[in-house]
Picture (cartoon, rainbow, N blue to C red):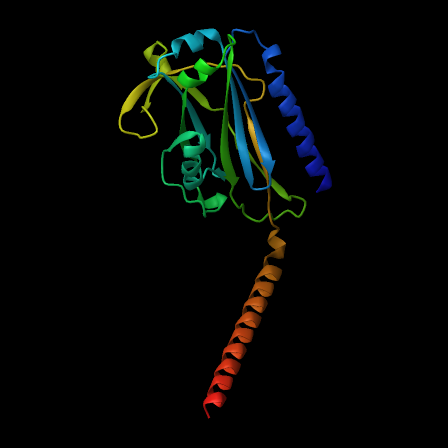
Length: 251
């Protein structure tokens, strides 16, 4: 366990350094995307850092121009719509879900769900002065419970989050590079979005999730039943004793 924690800390540090030095890896005119997971346990933040070249910035100076980050979360992870909506008034991401998300479901009974994350560059670009802008998106995500493992040597399962799609509503392109998607987070109409290719040195991220052991199921069931029966017995005795004391006072 200690070795796994140390490994995850080292990998997180390496990814952070890679994100900071990514601009030096590719040409300065490239559209760059860097990804990492922060936090620990079942509750993480999926951090996406976009480095925008001047050509993209010039195309998105109008308030009507936006970028669309299209995320697909696998069955082993989910984003909580209630949490996301509560963060919007405080500058949180503008996220539209493709379906109702059951936050209580386990991994083996869940399906992938898609997120439309809308990014407006108008105010951000006006506040920056350099020729290249960076735009960071922090998305809270959570791991789902997995089936217990039949192999005692397997204590963790890995959830893989694939690279997102990046689109623009102000970049001309061929029809083959376009999709129809909601125009904004209100989902009031559909718009044509153009795919924007980007470069990334680590677009795929993995989430390590602890799993139980199937051999422990009988012990867990017996312990749960014992605790439940004991607590019920204590409550019944307490209620009976209280009732008797009340009855004796009235005599």
